[in-house]
Length: 193
Image 1 (tube, rainbow, N blue to C red):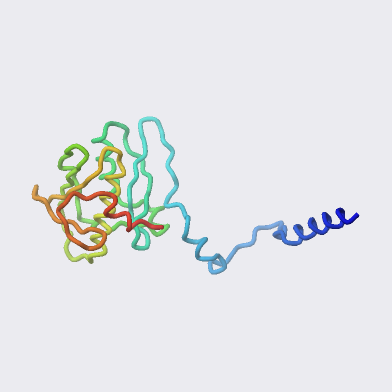
Image 2 (tube, one colour):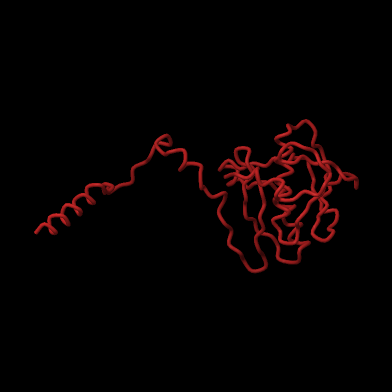
């Protein structure tokens, strides 16, 4: 008898702690949703489905001064085609849907990126266009976007930049300038958690 009473008490306790059943949806005020649920773990964008003749590549953009990964479709092909697909996606910027979810780019609108050459696992990106008048944070995020996107390809480990064929310095995540080859580890600290 005692076991039956305990079991019945447990069932009543569980039922009493449940969420009430409603026949119609009830809208929530934005302030009623905890901030952790509004921002954290929110997907960057819908994952595109892979169709015949295409594959996806990782491209990095910015949300709340942090770098976020986005998957984009790219033409299938060899490493050069995939690399050019990443560079093209970076210059195209975030889609309207991505922008609506707060995703932006730190790349200046007038900046043009071109793959100048590939040397083993190192890629040289040629810069053209205006980059002056920007904050150090914007420049660091821009370099981080490029380096993290390009090195996400399995065939690329390092990136250097040139302008007019001449190597240029780049800002590391800590604000230091360097002409050394840049790697993903130089910018991992910029990623959204």
